[in-house]
Length: 172
Image (tube, rainbow, N blue to C red; front, side, top):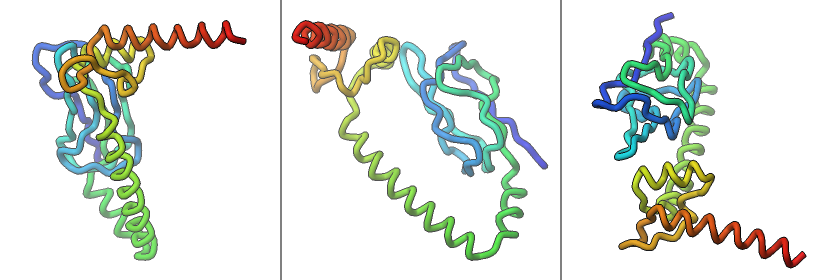
């Protein structure tokens, strides 16, 4: 079986950049340029795409890992061999899978549409700060132009939550 190793491409002068999101799972079929992971430095966040078609055999990275250029992201099975396996299956299974894919795509679209309205505007540095404190950045109200969230907004949000907890405990 032919395997292809997908590695982190040239990401500039950055070393040990944090993986903040894994966008694929084992067994998933990939096409060229499908996003695999999202990495974030202090100044930007970038999605790393696939250079090949294939089926994911093993994931080698997870959220929170630190990666640099040349680090292994995942191992793909060759797409030609995957196609041969699929062609051997009866047509009924193919039709069932097609309808399942359509249903999952429609579910993904509806959840993606919900996410679009809940996304808050914040720099990667502020997003990282919020993650370190365990705060969902989308719950924080921004005080800057067009509702942009800054570090002091995250601090205020945390303080207000802790004050609410203290007040609730005192009332009991």
